[in-house]
Structures are given as C-alpha cells and as structure tokens.
Image (cartoon, rainbow, N blue to C red; front, side):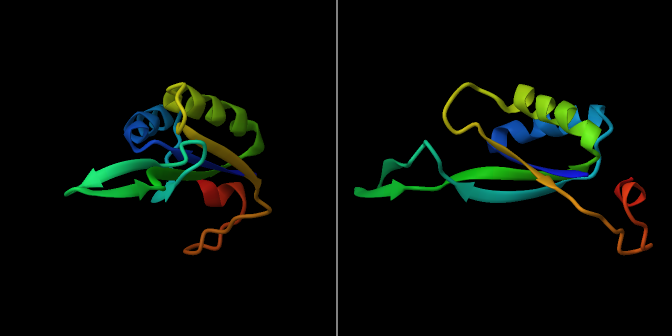
Length: 113
C-alpha cells in the first residue's frame, strides 16, 4: 500500500474531488495548510504599512491506496491541478506497512474499503 499526499492550490480542490469521486475514490483526509517553495513570498501593503507574505494557503489531500492504483491517482492529480505556474504544489508517495480500521479491527485492504 502507498499513501499519496498532494499539496495543491485551494481553488483546484473541488475539481480534484469530483475527479476522484468519478474514479470511486472516497477515502480522503483534507487539511488546510500554508507553505511556500519557489513562490518565496511577496510584499503587500495594508493601511499604508508594508508587510511580507511568506506562506501561501494550500490544501493537503491524503489518501491510502493499493500499489497498482498509485499511477492512475497521480495522473488525475497532475491533470486536474496543474496550471503550469509556480505554486501548483507537490505530490509525495509514502510506503504504508499496514492499516487497521479502529471500529472493527479489520486490517489491510478490507480496512480501506
């Protein structure tokens, strides 16, 4: 099993959610996060005072899937979230040793469904 963690633009989330739904992917964890990479930051002015914005709002989408599903999910994320501009985000793939459903004690694939 693998965990796919995608950091994306907030405005891309609804489209990604619809595309994942159409693939039958229902199990997600979604968090509002902030960060920066190549965007580095920008300067703003509020009530005449200059300030630097170093972190941008992002959405982190996490899902656990079987190994053979990874490539398809990554393709959907790339196709849905890419704008060809700095700040589109990143995708991280982590190995998952095992998973348990707390309520029933089910393990492995059964716990993901």
